Image (cartoon, rainbow, N blue to C red; front, top):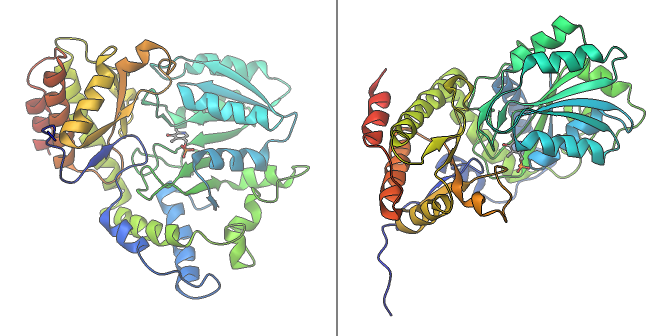
Length: 402
Ligand SMILES: *Cc1c(COP(=O)(O)O)cnc(C)c1O
């Protein structure tokens, strides 16, 4: 039997935009026998987790935990404030807004979507027109995605709040931070966000399985006025339980709580501002390499304006079928898994193979980023994608800057 030569043995690097790299401290915290779910360590730990979840979201208001992925958090949030027949406004800057809007429709609500394409942020003037035109205040909420993980655009949430205030529209501001929490600067209270959803497997570095909904006092009032709320999704007993099991609507996600505690410890030991600064600095190194590659040949970043780019995920294209060839090569030859392109072309469209994404969220540091970039450079040479020179030097220069 002949074996194909490969350089892939060694620690694998999953550089996709979620789930992200799991820190050893998180894995070790989860590797333990089943705990009592009625008293003791787990119960105390849950209180500290709730406190620290507020801290990372920069809020002194409320948080509810769900055994769910991000899609579950979307539905949980909607179920508490959007009733059948209600209407929401959805400015879309990529694929995820469409998914959340579609969930509204599945719950019998109306979602008015303004599509701003897949390569930039929303036009606030157009959103403002829609809000001003809604003199009857039919829009009960505006649903926005902080970072759209398919396009890798980062939207300005504080500007959306300012727009709502300027127009004087009472809609709730609901934000999807699934790809940005613990990566990009986010200030729930300072930015006037009413509802924020996230999940544990991206910036929070825990295997998929728990998701969160933070909500403001104003959103709690909206919840209180709902004709009915699904018992399971109801955030009120979860955020303010009288019995421990109500935190989770049933059995606690025991090992996820241990893992989450370890992850929050890592974040708080580093400091949330420093976590944001690390992501921003590493992202600049990624962009520097990508811009150098793009000097010659087909490599392009999806978001042209650096001010609009996510610090946690980067969407790029090299043209079909080379994107898939590159991903296959780095996975097979050097142990690096890159993300597929999402929402840029249908999976049965040959153009789908031209897109890919780099995940640089959570437990990543400078040497991992250099390894990822070096692997991509080797892959482009190996599969024959023309590219500009000096990318690794450009990235290293960015890392060397204070
Ligand atoms: C990952 C992601 C989701 C979906 O989360 P799942 O855990 O896959 O359900 C939704 N929105 C954004 C912005 C995401 O990055």
